[in-house]
Length: 87
Image (cartoon, rainbow, N blue to C red; front, side, top):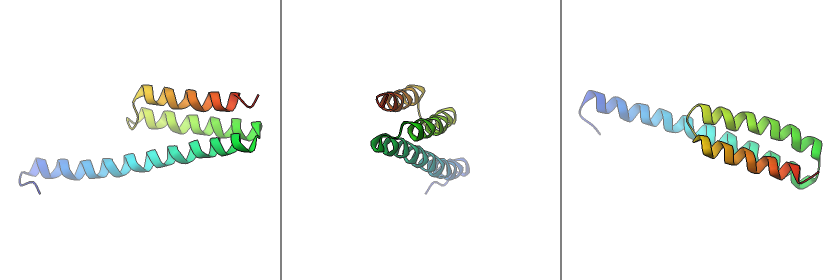
């Protein structure tokens, strides 16, 4: 453990942010799985509604700095292509 006050605070803040980032990443994975499950079932209407919700969560994670902008774009693009294949 650190001895300097500012170093102790950095350790605490890092731990808090790590937990927050884990929770957000987990939520994104859940929404991605929902979209993939809807595509697998072949229901385009459900897949599109799940896609809309997933995009919102992914972009919020990007705006909070959990994901890089390019990662956000890649995830959204891949999910959108997956849903559009149902056509």
